[in-house]
Each structure stands twice: as structure tokens, then as C-alpha cells.
Length: 479
Image (cartoon, rainbow, N blue to C red):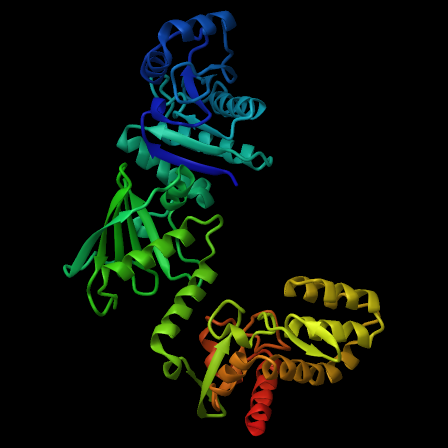
């Protein structure tokens, strides 16, 4: 996936595959960015190679070696001199960026560093220069070539103008900033510790991008200012962690100790939790939903079984309920996808899902698909095969599926003592599968949506949940 980043940095310090020189037509060492690049690369050797090329048209670019720079290549782009905008300057500037990116792609570059071309001594207005630059970059990325683009800027005013333009023109590439979400400062009651951890450049890039919450289960808003990361709870805006990154990989972490904001008082637990969060945050892509499941499961584990039940409203009556969704999430053992080997009619099954999908295919005479389901270990694949059963008739399946489900669940829980105990220990709680897209087996509501607590708001039939409750009753009566 391509990225666009605007960074306060000297362009000669970038470790991108290529950097771009704001060149003149004669490819001579000039002033500003051009002078800095010639000096860092090695004046004599770079000038000798440029002299061999001899000339670069305005709106075009040429490429040379990077010599003493970290970058392997230098791409020399000749931008236009601003003369009021009526001499084709926008088109020429656009072409200079596009040709630079094309040369980078032709030479196998996966990253490139730009100055703001023509905005220096060539007099191009900064706001217009940013707009032209970002439009060209997003146009190139839309062609399907993956490349990381970095704009290196020293001047704070130009940096601020670039950040504003990026948010307007290409918001998907803009990093999160403090004003993107509600925030509160780190409280006076806080603690500090050292986090000894090494981050790759790619991981740091993920952290610098930040995260603006996208859904109810997205529990964190974080952003970076300089080399400091601020992590806030999305629902409250409380600042829980501040990380001051250090080049020696001994990062200073400040953590809230305000009881109303954050309950933990152990540095060892803080360190463990923060490392786990950083694993999620630097993953590609960031999976906030499963991070939420992990945190929720951890909370339930600490709370104990007696506190793990929610309240559900059914016809103005309040009952205890247990909500579940993913086999790896809270109460995941209730899911049909949960690994739970059992045998029925001389056939071994690895999960209830495999049994149900196998029986579905047999009912409609699709023995080939039935055998394929038995050969598959992944419930996702088993379900995919079962959904395409040949000869399928909806009305027949609607009449038989709950009977098949009950038999499969009895096999699952009666042949796995630990799972049987867990199911019986749910006592009389209502069992509810949550899935927005499933209006048959589940209640049709996401596990993080408050409507799950009101049965009148359900969109689905919750067949799995009710079948589990019946199996629980059967197992309890057998005891």
C-alpha cells in the first residue's frame, strides 16, 4: 500500500530509494535544495555525471546515482519558474512530479523523497505548489504502483501548509493530529517507566500515521508530535500513554495513574499491555476489532465468571445474557467455529461447523462437496463450500437446520468435558450470537452495538444461541 508523508527533515538525510533534486535546466549545482544535495552526494562526481547528461527540459526529469547519499538514486526534476500561472506552470510542475515518479518506478524504487519543487527561488506560491504536488502523487498512486512518498521540509510554515493541503486533497494519507478527536492532557497523577523495544522503520511509519477511531470497538486514538506518541481512549479522550521515542531504543513511557481513567497500578502489567497494544498498532493493516476482542476477553478474565454476564431486555423483563461472536473472542467456545473434535455416526469432525456443513451437502445429494468439507480443517473454507451446495432448497434447509444443529452441538459438548462444564456454568443466562450480517444463526446485531441488549431490536433469529440453551438444558438433566 502506498503512503504519502510530509516530514520535517533535510532531504539529504532521507533513506528512501531515491531523492529528488529541484534542478535547473543545465543540471548545475545551484542554491537551496540543489546545493545541499550536490554537497552531500559529492560535488565533483555528481556534477561529472550531470554534465554527461547535459540538459533537462522544464517539466521533465533525469536520473543519476546517489553517490555518498543514503539514497541509491538522485532524480533531477526541472520545475517551472513562476510567472503568474499563465505560462503553463501548473502543467509543467505536474509533469515534473509525474516524470520523477515514473523514473523511480522504472528503476525499481519503492520509496522516494521530494522537496517542494519550484517553491523556493523559482517563486511558485506555496499553497499552489502543494496542491499540484499532491494531485500528481495521488494520480500516480491511482495507477496501481506501490510507492512510499516523503516530502522533506525544513520551514515550519511550509510544513503546516503541506499538512493542511494533504488533509484536503488526499485525506486518506494524512496523519492523525491532536485536533482530530477529543483529548485530555496527561493527568497530574502519573508514573513513568522505560520501554526497551526496537521498532523497524515500517513500524514507526505506522505509528506516525496515527489512528482516528472508525467504530465503537476502536478504543484508541493516537497521534505523534515530533518523536512523542500520545495515546488516548477514544470514548473518553483520556490520555493513558505518552511515549517519548529514543534512538537508543530505551523509550520513556508516561502512564496515567488517575483511577477514574485507568485502573492499572503495576508497571509490569503496564509494560505487558503496552507491548501488546504496540503489536496491534504496528500490524499491517491495524485490526482494531480483534484488538478490542483481546482487551474485552482480558477484562472478562480478570473480572471472573460471575461478572462476565450482561443484562438483556426481553418484553420489559431484564435477564442475564452472554454475548459471543468470534471463536477467539470472549466466550468463543460457544461459536460453531471453535475447535472441538467429536465423533458422530463413525465420522470424526473438528468443529460443529464442519458437521453442519457436511450434513447440509448430504441432504441435497452433493457428496463431492460433503467430502471436500471433511477434508478441510478451516471452518471458513467449510462454510464457503457448504454455501454452494448443489441442489440446495431454502425451505427444506429452513426446516432441518435447527435439528442438525442440535445434534451437532450435543456431540460437541457431550464429548468435550471442559466445554460441557463451561456451557453448564452459564446457568440460566440467555446465549446470544452477535453478527451484523447473520440474521439466521445470530441476532443480526454486532457484538459492540448497544442494541444487542434489547431483544426487540434484534434483526436476526439467534438460532445458534437458542440451540445452545436447549443443549445446556439436556446436558444438565443428564447430570
